[in-house]
Image (cartoon, rainbow over all chains, first blue to last red; front, side, top):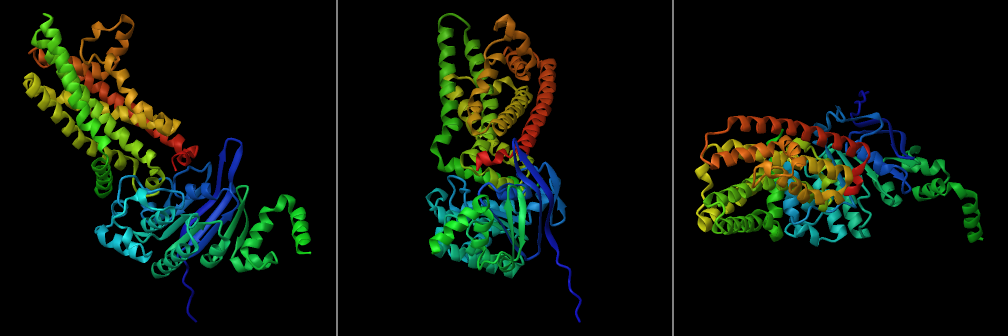
Length: 261
Length: 262
């Protein structure tokens, strides 16, 4: 019998805590992502997802906790670690006064890609937007901008791809294109994915494991199907509703049951 | 420091300048207007029987050297503000780019703008007022270098304040230099300042650099003492500027201010 090969840990964040004035935004969160794994970080608005991601990316300093990406400890190893990380967010615009091709070439250079032209063309092709190459960033729709942001974050074939609400502003067709592109990319290059989304259907399709956050803590964790079964529901969306309607859960249930009757 | 990242920042700002005609105002129009303004003022004063040609030279040399600080400062500070205005800060912070590489990129691109701006001034002063700054000689080189570094140092303070107080603090980018200008005696010896301001003026390395330039304009020997004071002051200011911006960056990361820019 073949010996099992230990799977490399790409991201290990332990006991992360962050307080902003009176608000404990993140409270003892552990996030571990292994090579090739797709992990979803879920929760209602204000649950602490984006703060957690920004700490992992080195943009916010945690009050306590440790972060290690591809063996590099943050903050000291941030620059080296970020060579292996890609980040895109649905809410981030592109730099002003640059064409899409120029934005992508600039970021390719930041990641040390020797021949940005080929990487840019391949990236645009993968997400089926080569026609946008010579469009100015400001002329893009929010959906197109998101697609370009995802191309930007994957140009250098990162080992960890972090996406914050990547499909928030996309229509179903484009969102599906993103999912397919990400699937292919992650499969071909073994890229690990850490994603936040409010779209539970999308998360179920993309992620092997999900973590639900509430009030800065991870309250549930596991594969989507297992979690849904544990809660006695068919989908993650129902799990979400169960978790985040908690303060008036009984009232909410009665309302639903009443409605059914 | 990785050169390819510095180059990426240079090309990003080159695209912005190419596509944004208003940005040329700082680089070409303002230097041109200032040269004509201060040159004409000098000529007018000279014709009133005041200073003769020396007055024109003082004013033109003063404004030209002031533009060295101005262009150096504005290039780095506006370069950073560009990321703030286009909400690109988080995009950059999540790449391998280091703070030093970023500043090196905008400063390097700023040098190109500086050469253009100063070139316009030198040419205008020569053609319109028969004033050649090169007549000052090689002594101009250390003065120029000191003012260049001071411009960069002031930009570090501006960046630090924008990091701490958010995009609304960007007004300082233009305003801060107009506090430095009168105190530094750009056009006059600081003895002309109100007595209460003179000790403060003496603390600024720019004061000694401009005084050294005036000494050279008067065809006196190189004032090495003043140059040395200006250089030491510049080094001290550079350390203070670096310490300040690093501390503000720590505060920025600690308090999660990046969300103000995204």
